[in-house]
Length: 424
Image (cartoon, rainbow, N blue to C red):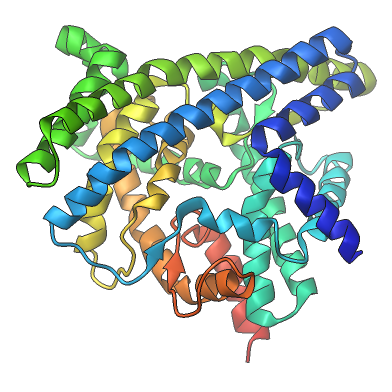
């Protein structure tokens, strides 16, 4: 079984998310009667769209990170936990329970669908990695591989329920019928709904409308996506320049990078939709033919599918420097989020439908959400560091953490529950 586990891990690690999506979507199309031509075209376009999203998001994060790092120096920030961001994804493909977790999650998912308890098919194999890291944490902490597999399976199964709860909202807002998003970020969607109700009840806040449409209406050309991105990027770069950590050419280059992000990200999402929608429609038609309209099935897709609305990146770019300031102001927080900023656009994609693309409310909610996330990431830095060192991905003595998995509230609850029960 160890050899099987190594083969599965190698395949997942070497293929990457966009190739896995292409393969899985093609298999789904063939299995659910979409036909070879539609399955081939749809799967390739889905992979291309996802690859484009990742390229643009990563490029923007890479461009913004030096500016944000410089801003942290200007403000004199110093924390003790090294932010690894998605560097902890290496744990998902190296811990010994990875292949067994995939089998367990698929088996549980099929059973729950057959029993009509959940509607989301866990077809997004790449997004298993979040649960795999949680499983690795539990294994390292307890020393028991079985507990690690159980922890990972619990986490991923819980996310299928969250995907069910948020599916309709994401389908309508993003124009992607039949999809669901079982990634960790959709937990924010569960909390965004009641927070929007609270914001609606607060005088003053309930009058602020910063939707992309309203911004464009009131600011004219400065509300255009590309222009707005250019201005935001230049302002961040110019502040860094005023602090003696940058140059005007660097600020202008950052402005162009952010403008590219704002203009082309929605276009990549449209390519992704062009591939995913025909195949998900085939799945829906197949289910209705076999089981009637009483049975509803959602096809799991990566959280990158939520990035298309203009409000997503507008709020994300505004949040990059604000999260740095928040991190240093929080007493007891040990991590300065730099690498973890890559998760912010996905957070915003998860909450945009619930705040009706109101950038002001999205930024306000995310700053509130980041408070417990930073504390969880700091508190779990011990198990995070131990896991990285155990798997040979970090040097002994390095204290590491991340906002994504280490700071995820659901993951933290599961890890700490296993600690309380099984670690004496």
